[in-house]
Length: 325
Ligand code: PSU
Ligand code: MN
Image 1 (tube, rainbow, N blue to C red):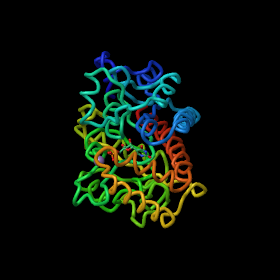
Image 2: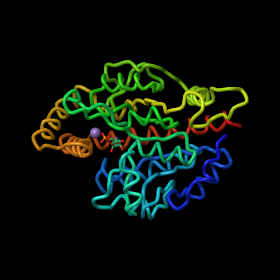
Image 3: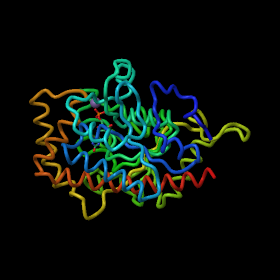
């Protein structure tokens, strides 16, 4: 078992004592991203959700570790006062792999995307991460080349990402194709369907399926444990390396059927194109417009699915720590 937390440059990476103690004892820890707080939901619902998700993880027997950049340091595990500060911050940088060193060097604050959260979780030794939806291949990517850095990161950092699929605003068939090319396992949880964030089904099949947290944990252990019998186990460069997508459909009671969402998505996409929205502004813009167009229904569904993912991630983290003991 790697104990990288001991060798990390503490000037740049600060792991909360509750988190590092849990990791050192092999107990369950779940990482959480912060872009969903700063760019994915409006204040104060973002703060309420961040706090609710942390308590869902605790109720599931795991320690939550929300990841963000504050004062030029990667922080793994935030105090409630810091979560409040982040949730109400104006003009905070959305940090993906490419942005990480410059934001750290400048001593700034930043919220971490799925990609950056995976990097930071792996540095701290955390193997499970819960979020809403991963980034993916954008519609029209054949012209824009807009493919989220989340996909490449899933092939690099050894973290299992529990999500409700990729957002319906994306091109889901292309997103699955890229994940397959990159060798990322995409596991439908309790379902044969690849979910579409607000909806339980996308019309696409999930390439793989697991029906229990224990089954997911054993896939993780096998993926990272492959190697010579006398070699290290569970290391980032061991075995197959890289991450996994655990695609957990939104609960039935909270879902918005795909057909009902599609007209709103078309409207939001047209507005984005008319206003020349590009690059990292695209995803936050679309999420904000969908919330307005659905009169808040998309936000309610988003909160429900994130909490559902947090509960599953806590169960997987528990099962994975039992694998290691
Ligand atoms: N899913 C959500 N809300 C979000 C995001 C995903 O429900 O805010 C964020 C995640 O942080 C994800 C990012 O990593 O959007 C993807 O942005 P881009 O498409 O620019 O890579
Ligand atoms: Mn992009």
